[in-house]
Length: 102
Image (cartoon, rainbow, N blue to C red; front, side, top):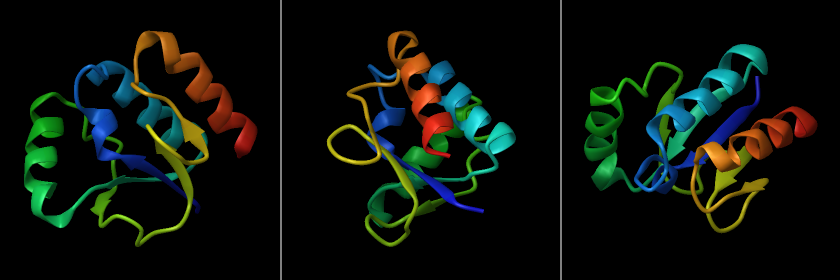
């Protein structure tokens, strides 16, 4: 199984929680990716609580330190898929790229 590594910044507003959840659902269930959130170790708890309280952690496998895992990267600055925010406007682009790069 390959990984989808999501920059933790894409879980924060102005990204939309529902779109983040849709992207991780699609990657995990339909494309069989392992879904990892990439962030500094000292903020893992903040992101975990943020996602858990919003019902967005269902399709996330784990948190990883920045640069420690390989796989497809969903990031706001550089990676396999680059978007500034996960919103309804970017959802089709991200899902299309996930499918195309699979």
